[in-house]
Image (tube, rainbow, N blue to C red; front, side, top):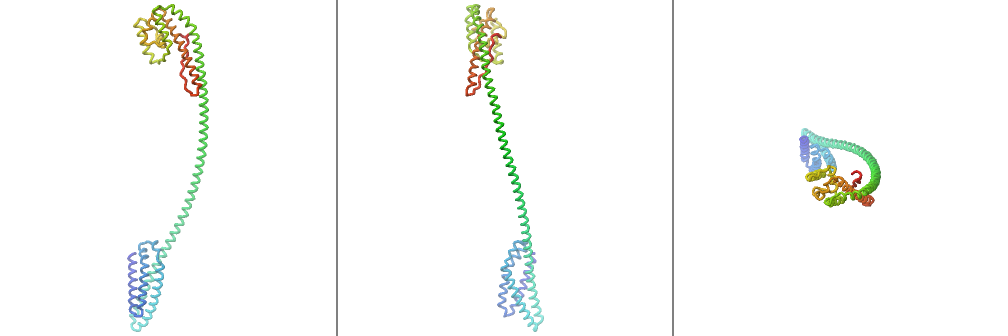
Amino acid sequence: MDSVDQQRTEELDLQAQTILHQLHLDATSSTKLDLIQSIYTDYIDALRPTLELLAQGQVEAAETLDEERVDPAFEQLTTLLSEENTLALEQTRRANQIADLGSIFTIALATFTIGAIAQRIQQVNNKIQQALADQAVLQASEATLQAERALLEERVGERTRELDAKNEDLSQALEQLKITQMELVQAEKMSTLGQLVAGIAHEINTPLGAIQASSSNSIKALSGLLEGLTQAFGKLSQEQRQPFLSLLQRCLVPSSSLSSMERRPLRKALGQHLEQAGLPIPPTHLDRLLDMGIRPDNLEEVLPVFEGGDRDWMLSLAYNFNRLQHNSNTIRIAVERVGKSSSPSGAMPTKISPPANPNSL
């Protein structure tokens, strides 16, 4: 397309130059020649950028044709060329009398030049019309896009309203869930409070029961203990009395409870010491010795008690004495437990061992 436009431009230049050369021959047209040449130069300068853009396929850019320069120049150029054409026809008529061939050539050249210019202008106008049509298509497409954009915005708005409604429902559900959770927590607190009250009542009743049982057992133990002590001192030899008193003193000292794992080696060691001394005793008596605080390291000081035929009775008497101390300790712990249960600090009470029954010995 560039080559065609260039060829047409060259033809237009050649035709214009031919006309100008022909007009230059007429001395009376020298002023118009300068004017036509000036107008033609302005016309070509104004038209050339548009032609180049059209040649490059940039139709939208070509729509910016400087009509204020092109149209007046074209009209003036057409008018002048028409006038010169009329003048040329007149000159041809005159010259026809001199030389028909020269006049025909001049008229044909002028007609061809004007026709070429008109054809070029028509082509430019056609391209401009095509550009305007393309612009109309673009405007229609833009209107369609705006309509689609409006529809899309409407759909987005509807979707947003739906999401807002769902969020509101979720907020209400969450609020209801919080209320339900608070009710459940309150119910759990009330349940826990009920359990706590029941536990406090149980903790209060348990020490009271332990106190009552321990007191009853202590009374029974005391009733038989005084009589037993009187008989014991009558049966004991002089050498056995002091060890027996030492045994009773140890029974009065509270000893820590031993686990089964701790009892086994101590019970075995006590049994071995007694066998080595020739005073074996039943395994139940070994457990009683451990409860009374007798260990392998202090067994020697109470060993004379095991000599003689009344050792089982002596051990039972000492064990009852130890159980009396144990019951007294149980009462003390129970009283402390009742005090702690009723105190604002809410401290947990100490575990109470069941009271010892002297009748079971």
